[in-house]
Length: 441
Image (cartoon, rainbow, N blue to C red; front, side):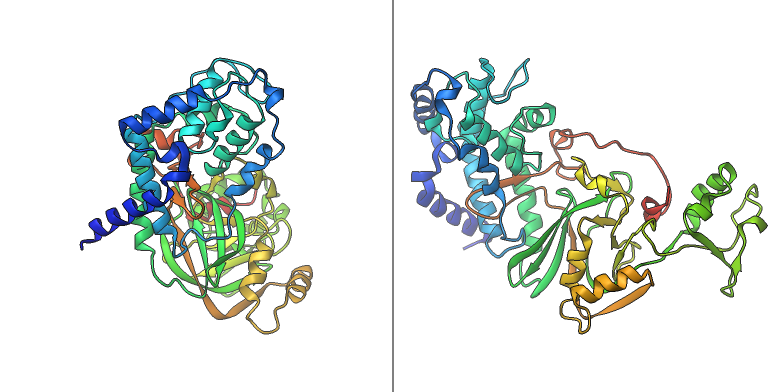
């Protein structure tokens, strides 16, 4: 049996097993689609939104969270099932567009809520038993939160601009996105190691995986569209506590020189010191900052709270000069769009990840690590065993219970313009090293 036929056979078997319970998402054929749509339309219509309060509905976003890794052994099967389900949605006419001139949220009554209900029923976010009313009740609130969580959006239950754009991406486009990402996932199948770190760039988050389960999950900041984080497979070999930051030559020329012309105290304020080739320290006052070319000196920022990498730098072998690190700008992790760096990856709660990386390195308990950070002394630590790290580009996957996840195609690699238009990226046209995002301000 060919690989393609094997996938098709699996999909048919899985569909037959799940068809009885899958609801609106998995109906097949025109007759089935019409029957399902009739059931939706003819289901009970309750009079007002407060008659339909369901305490569990507002918590349905939590069902999206899983300790199953994106590169888990069952992920490919789950994605194949999702592809089959979405093929049936597409062959049945897809889902309706939601058109509204009002802000849809809990308590609102508007005809467009009927479209919203149908849309969420088709994708499996809302049970058909909720009915087709014009009231945005707690059932719809829970379904919207579930949808938002699946798409990496804040699960606030409000149909804002970006949620509406995601809702109106056609089913055919979502199907293509799943098919594209199946190929990517298949390329990562196999034994990735007992412990590994996965950076999913479009999702801007990190998984630390141990023995097939997600041990830690971290919010991340990754490269913007014109300074992309690279796709790579490597091994983490070192954690540096209280790291130095050394400015690349291009940043010295293009950024620091102009900054020093405007503000001669810039280096001192940011604890950046100058060193010559023999390691001797050079006073900034001796440098001609108006010169055409930057001085042939090393610009090194001392460890500390204002250091561009703050408490931690995580090194792995790669030709791109990228790494993972802490940041003094913790507020950036609260942003919806976390495509802010110039290639390197900033990690929220990076000390948790460092502690996990170091837990098998003798002498480096969490307490010892924290005590060392408090000293402010630059301390490189070589891991007892290198940990694999994968920088990946996965915009669609399904890890458990038929919950299909989608993310924006930030680097425009999925081949559909709709997927790159959900949220604002703020592309900056700037040149320089991938380390320029660490330039102290």
